[in-house]
Image 1 (cartoon, one colour):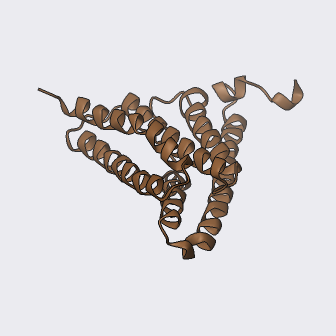
Image 2 (cartoon, rainbow, N blue to C red):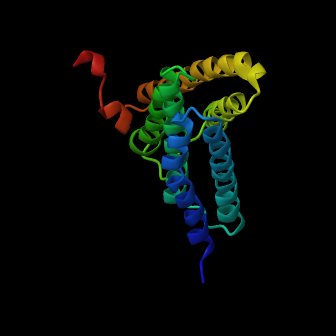
Length: 195
């Protein structure tokens, strides 16, 4: 019998396996590519919603499961956005920032703060949710909702700004911790500008 933890991991794995087909569909120019991209994206969103529900309902939430889930989301979104960049739908800076923000999230949670789980922030959490929105908007435009072009452009640049702000907040928190706790791992790393 499949345990709840295995079920949650299976749902995340299913989303991970959807990345390659999604990228190919997001890179395609045809109307049918957009239609199938919508189906794959819907399946990815459903698995993302369900894996957390299953893990929380059965109290099988783990740090490793959280990293697997967030890393899969990051890969899915970044790859989809990069495919959109190849088609000219998005500026290159957004997928680069999504990947950089996730890397910072992991490094500062586990390495700098020596945490046993990811250290979330309110803005980071909202950004993580909203990173799916440009993918939805692009697919909708390709399926005929051309009136979404201007709002999508505004959303993309708002996400660029909010991601930079979120990354800045994390960096500021690390610098503040370094000043307050001289014996911490953050402080032991020293000021790179003085090397």
